[in-house]
Amino acid sequence: MLFRYLEHYRYPPEANQLIRLVRALDEGHDVTSCTEYRIGHVTIGGIAVDRDLRVLLVRHTEPERWLTPSGPLDPRDVSLVGASLRELERQTGIRARDITSSPDEQSAPFDIDVRSVPATNDVPEHVRFDFRYAHWVDEADVRPLIGDSARLSWLPAEELHPCGLKSKLSAVGVG
Image 1 (cartoon, rainbow, N blue to C red):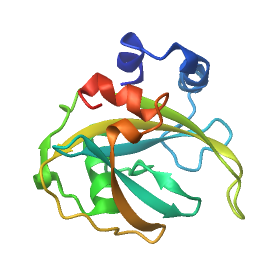
Image 2: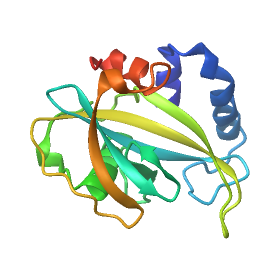
Image 3: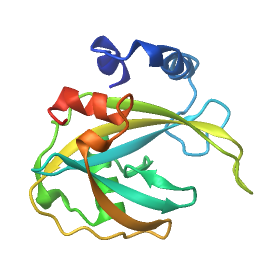
Image 4: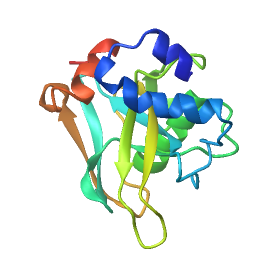
C-alpha cells in the first residue's frame, strides 16, 4: 500500500518523512510491530466523515489534544482497510454496518501521517506512520470506548487545519 500511495503522491513536502519508512522496509525492519521504536512503526487511522462533510475527532487525554481515531496494527488484521474499520469502532463505537462507503480492500490510504510521539515513562520517543482511510457514515451512534479518549466531536472539514488533513481529504471528496 505504501508504494501504491507513493505512485499517486500529492504531497511533496512530506516525501523526506516517507523515505524513512521506505528505507526501514528495504532493511527488513518489522514496522508493523508497535514496539519498533528505533525506526518507527505503522499505525492505522479510520477517519469517519458524515453527510455534512464533518470529520469525527477524538479528544485524547494522553496526549491532551484532538486527533483522528487511530491505533496499532493487530496481528489478526487481514487488511489495512479492515484494520482502519476495527480501530474506528474501537475508539468511537461506529461499527462496519454503520459505514455507508469505504475504500475497497486494495485501496491505498488517502494519507500517511508521519508524527513524532514524545517519550513517556516506559516508551521512548518514536515515529508513527499512520495509514489513514476515509469511511463515510450517515448517522452513527458514537461514544468513546477506550480509556485514553475523553470525548468525541464532529468538526466541519473546512475548519480543519488547511495544510494538513483538510487538503488531503479533498482527494476523497471532502472539503
